[in-house]
Length: 239
Image (cartoon, rainbow, N blue to C red):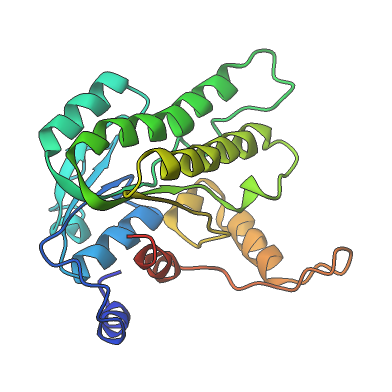
């Protein structure tokens, strides 16, 4: 985030200088994507943020420093047209994903939830990379966003775990296919953002407490709830 803490990080890390660079963050108007967009801007980049929502800078002044696009990653034609409009860029971050809770369960009556989630998160990430690459600097980067559940699944989250694993496999393949362009994945754990607003205040507090509490049955130590700046720091090592 564009705070004194970010400026301190920038001062401590002179190699993280994005002056003159163009950064595109798909899913950059809220949550982790917004935090990374703010960090890239603080490092000197020109930043474009894209998402399904049309957001007024007057209502959301945190978006004022950025160029904004409305982009639905589940629509290939929309993705193709958007990157044609964006033009040349140096770094791409794809943090966008479907609406929380939209993925469905394995034993649902049909596979609409799973298909929709996979089409949006996996094929949407694929499409963003595919149509960005012709405009991407040869020493640029692509970074995808998944989550800790890719490695440690939970009941009812089969679609999410499978889709995240597919995105990570895509990144490994593209790292070979697109070199010297760098392709990476950020896999955050629990990050305390407004994306958890679909939970009630009580349920959200319970989730935070479970993250912090040790699990004696597995030997897992209690963890700190992450914040935007943690992921911005990780992105610094990917861009």
